[in-house]
Length: 197
Image (cartoon, rainbow, N blue to C red; front, side):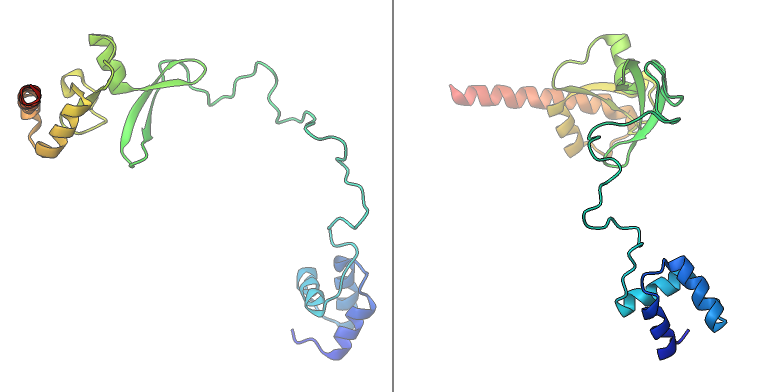
């Protein structure tokens, strides 16, 4: 709607009227059907200030003064000892994305919220704790295939070599490639030790 001078003068005369009430008065006087939000926007453009605009007035006291850190109970507040319905039980298995976007299966191994990769959990159940600086990898590179025959324990150094030289090798040759890497690392280590003598 195009506002005429007569409309703007009316709005100026009723500047302090709450905007919903002002919309009713304006629409009744000028036989219009302007929503109160549109009228409030026009008032803002004209620089008109309504004391009842929902903002705190200078010097007003907030209703929550003196209650810093205090939250009263309401119907959605958890009671002490209650457990939310979406809490997973120990032994629950979920699929999650890692930071690179790969899907991995995880298992809840203890309370309150202790999780482990399912592949590592399966390996440890069969062979014991994974040694420091080692990891369990997937022969077929499918992190959702957690069968024990698809898992392989490698050191971090061996993993680097596998990824450098044998990243595209067939899964049936993965263990052979690991043995080649182990022999190569042993030869390099021996060569470095001899060079230092």
